[in-house]
Amino acid sequence: MISIETQKENGHDLLILRGEVDASNSVILDEAIQKLINDGSKSILVDGQGLEYISSAGLGVFMSYLEEFQERDIDLKIYSLTPRVYEVFKILGLDQLIPILPDKTAAF
Amino acid sequence: MKHQIRIYCETSALAELRIFLQKTLGEFHLSDKDQHQVTLAVEEVCANLIIHSHNCNAKDHIELEVKEASGKLIFEIKDQGEAFNLIDYEIPDLKKVIGEKRKGGLGIILVKKIMDEIEFESDKGINTCRLIKWFQT
Image 1: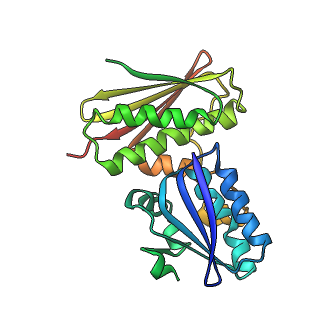
Image 2: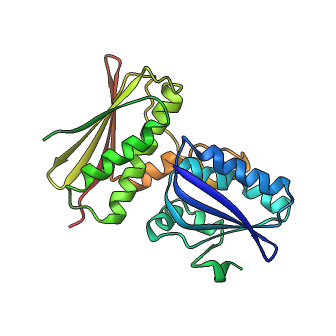
């Protein structure tokens, strides 16, 4: 189960993830990001505090947008990941490709 | 007691698989971090089988058995789909994954990095993939 909420704050788009992202629902994450791009977002901040689990299907969604974000000058940051989810980003080396911040204040 | 589960080849079964693993792994001496990671690795292999070998055909199934052997935990995954030997699968370069906007390929990197040993055999139409995690001492 995944739930995604979006909020606007100081010109940033917050993408608040809760639950578990796997191959059965990663398309929901994909659509949420696509919508923010279509709506002209320049800064996407992903709140990972409630993200309990993410498999490669979800990680792959972030990966698949990295080039487009660079081309369109869109800033992507992830913050407040739990230590065990952060570990998974590190195993893949995604922490070298996406700024991962300890909390919301650091991401702003 | 045997720790085994049969899941059907649809992605909605992955949540069921995680619940089984969480319950089963609670009985072994694994750190929270290892528990999370081996769950992920087993799920990645099963997701690959469900999606690529079985085309999400819910009539097909996969069997998983978790066994403890001297100092290690063995996850034996059996299916009867098209054999996919992940040992031979060359892990893609991360930069290539980004360039091609591919959403796949990452799962196998995770499995290979998380597990200590991987075995694969195919016999009379049954494929067996064994993922092995050594206990930290």
